[in-house]
Length: 482
Image 1 (cartoon, one colour):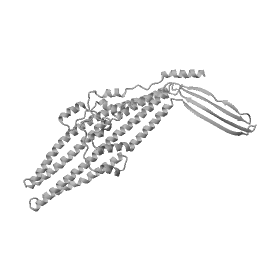
Image 2 (image 1 turned 180 degrees about the vertical axis):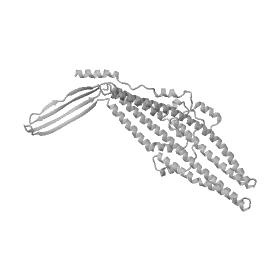
Image 3 (image 1 turned 90 degrees about the horizontal axis):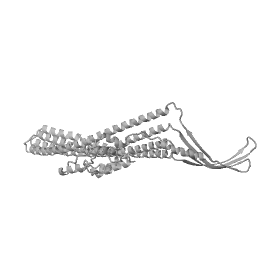
Image 4 (image 1 turned 30 degrees about the vertical axis):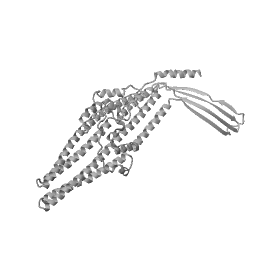
């Protein structure tokens, strides 16, 4: 027994020589190698913000609650929609199940570090006929059995680290999916409101052109207009009305897409979204942060880094196979037996054993396994760097798109005001006989084109804002936190 205890103490002393995971840079260090510290991604203030307050907004760059960034649009319907999608989407639920599976694997790997205790019992009654003498044999007993595999060189602990990295990767994959779904649902909602606004624009312009057609027909009755003017007015009205079914189809498609995101049937979202609404306008101030902060917030970056951690732990697992492995078995119990009518005998079943195995020859299998795991780790590091570069591009592109969309919206609004005034003047001049009907037709076309352009600019600005929030990471989790 003393020898066993001494051997166990020796095994514990050897744990100081445990294999460590392969070395690699931390995520913050990797990010700092790529992101310039003074490179800002401050989003532009809203065009509705007074000029005097824009400088203050830029200087303060208040941090919004990025985890609920859709609140910044101040649209209750959009808030309810995104909330429903995150709660009911089937892909999110499936990803949550994958997280639970990874949690189970982590628990299983951690349990391998600890001793395992089992209880056993047996009872038997058999008749012995061959060989003589003939008689009954009865046995009954119980035993406790303890098994332990001391992790002397750290192979099992590294497997626990690998399982934890896999669990963290599953969590970050869930966060990535949640961020993408929130952005996709918000974008689909914006497209729906754009299509509903486009339908309203077409209906309003159809009324304008119907009035112009009736006016032209009345003027023809008095000889003030020609059949050509009436035909042109009818042509413009018919062309405009022909666009309505296509826009209505877009609305139905967006409703179906939103229903799929929410894990529901299209009919179930009609009550919430069928009523037309305006395109949601983003808040006056948007989050501003350095690239390093933005990258550390992005779940796809954290997910790529967990792969590096997983591969580093797997390299250590492969290296640990070069060293001996030990196992300890301890059992104790009682066995009572009666043979052929003889008095019952009892026996103590105490047993202890320490086993050790060490590789001697494996034809280079372990070395090749280590080389393969190291190559996989280097590959994961390259993919992490590529993810970081794509993330930086995503942030800069989203910021640039938002700047462009904000500037275009202001210019489009000015153009719409001018074309609206031109339409009113052309109608008045035409009624007074001071202008031809061609001027009215041109003004109608210009007004419709500018109204479409303003509606599109509002859509692009809202979509660019969603893209920027998505590029900045959405606020789910920070690197290093589970």
